[in-house]
Amino acid sequence: MNFFKDLSLSSFTAGFVAVLVGFTSSVAIVFQAALAFKATPEQLTSWMWALGLGMGLCSVIPSLWLRKPVMVAWSTPGAAVLATAGLTGGFSMNEAVGAFMLCAALITLFGVTGWFEQVMNRIPVAIASALLAGVLARFGLQAFTAAQTALPLVVLMLLSYLLVKRLSPRYTVPITLLFAIIYVAINDLFTPARIVFELARPVFVMPVFTWSAMVSLALPLFIVTMASQNLPGVAAIKAAGYDMPVSKIITLTGLATLVLAPFGAFALNLSAITAAICMGREAHPDVRKRYTAAVSCGLIYVVIGLLGGTFIGVLMSFPKELIAAIAGLALLGTIGSGLAAAVKDESQREVAIITFLVTLSGVVIAGVGSAFWGVVAGAIALFVQQYGQAAKTKAS
Image (cartoon, rainbow, N blue to C red; front, side, top):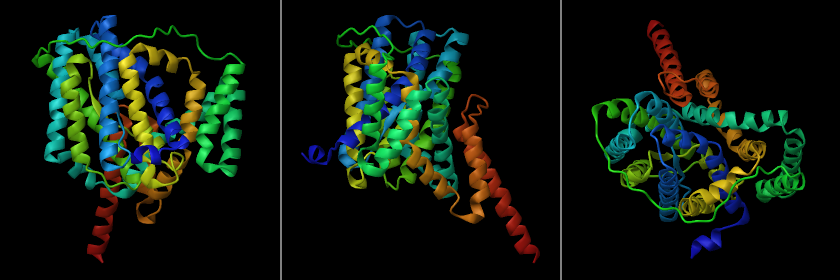
């Protein structure tokens, strides 16, 4: 099988780092969302089962089919919206599942019709690149702010990264991660976690469809998933230079969510941060073989889904500073490439900077994250710029 021939240590490590970053950075928010609907411990495990299988299979299958790195994740801002709306609205788990399915139907509709891809194709390269750089730059900053609480660890990782990058660029991230794990183990910095080895069991919840849940849960979940997750996800694909059938992948995530929603998969979407890790040069020097990083990531997701809380306990034992630092260092190349592409065209440089800064700000307006508002701000700036140029041309 070509996958095993193309697989390398660096691509597998990129997949593992993507899982490490993706899960540990937001799994607590997912738990909060589930608990907001009064989830039982069995239902919590079922959520991890559904999300793990959904993300894993939606990453593995299209990546092997296209031989390109397709990365699918859960909707972190969507989970935050659910956690808030669930507590304030007093919705039952049955109503929540009904809302998940309505959201999935909308995602599928926008994928089948191609509406979302049509909108994305109209976004200029400068804005799309600045959007991606703004989303990822926050993780780059966190890599160094982690030094406030773990200076020796972060300095060690930075020096390892710079040294190995010079001597053996292909294995920069794996060796940096290895040094960090050795340091953490020697200094006994792993967080104690209760790890019980057992297979997860899916729990089916009958959906109930209500008008209030549709307005308060389904529509906000759909909007933030498309604007704050799929939008930068497509930007990551474009920035990496891949040509993918975006509409078909969006449709796949919608259908997968629809099938797995009764078991706890609230929303699956394209990934931006973890995708950048698996699409960068650090994953594999050969762009044609980087799909192995996405497949590795997807297979680990499937294992996490099957083992439920077992694997999560292992991941959560890593110090948060190690996770922040390895994520930021692994994304440095992609952040640099995004910024370079964003400011390449001097005529659109200011537009790109505005998009970048608004996205980086992390501002949330009307429950929608900064990724969407960065594009809006950039589009307004571009319109004003082009309108002004057109007016000058007409006057002369």
